[in-house]
Amino acid sequence: MMPVDAPERPAEAGLRTEYPFVLPRGFVDEQGTLHRNGVMRLATARDEISTQTDPRVRQNPAYLTVLLLERTVVRLGTLPIVDPLVVECLFASDLAFLQDLYRRINQSGHTEVDVACPSCGQDFAVDIAGDAPGGA
Image (cartoon, rainbow, N blue to C red):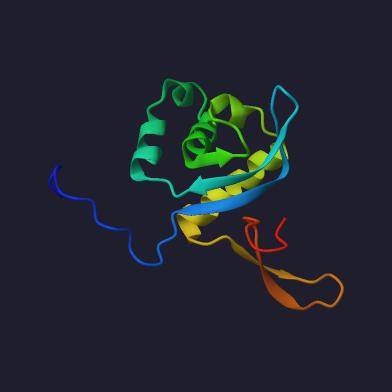
């Protein structure tokens, strides 16, 4: 265990901890502003553990998704914060997109998916986070 007063070590070279994304539909705030661009960070053990003991999760285990996304989506458009209400008000397709992104970056470690062109059948990789040029 590292002493409390030990200096923080710099991040390992090449370790990516934040993943930009573009929501398929986007979150519409109370003023009617559409927010689609965001950033999700890697989850920590604390994120996974502390959300398990939340009373809302005990009442409804499906609420775990809301809390995990609220903690790991660090930016969404120009919103000052991403709280549980923002996640609850996402369109179902955007929630599914973020759940898949969360799983990919925290379990698989990447956001690329192998796909095939429906016209020519050629295989290629697509970054589903949408941060690559031309990404959705």
